[in-house]
Image 1 (cartoon, rainbow, N blue to C red):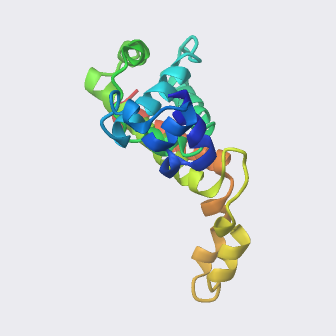
Image 2: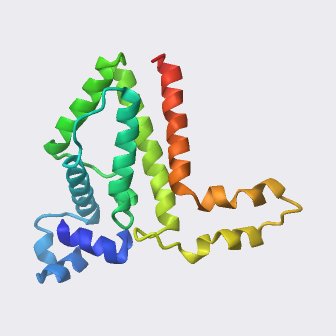
Length: 202
């Protein structure tokens, strides 16, 4: 898993293959097929490792459920941004490690104790999770984990492409589309949590 995550940092998700990992470890590629049937099995295990590592950083849960959700979203986004294509790696991957069950139980129990039904608690976490994953995937396309902006996502270049006379509103939002990701994440997260509060009457 560590060899796969090392390659992920260097080459992105497309560059992670069983053959490349075998070369990194100095073994023959068929050796890895005793453990993995295909690349998706490998990606699932790598994603699980990233989440297990993140779970190890989760401390005491805050008293307010709003702070719990906000802290969950912020800390997982931070963990995923520590890897090249981290959110893409985790999105949709199958994770079956029992180490993830205990924190899930704690999060759900916190929401239920705060007055959520179990169905509401599940929907709440899946909604916040979907928001942070989708936002982070978009962010990964623009910036490397080191904070370097990919040239094709230049704010100035977008401004130059869009005719401000014909499309004045679309022209004005370059900074909101390709910049200020931390600020925009917090604003969007606040909107999601406010919506949950209104719909669940909490």
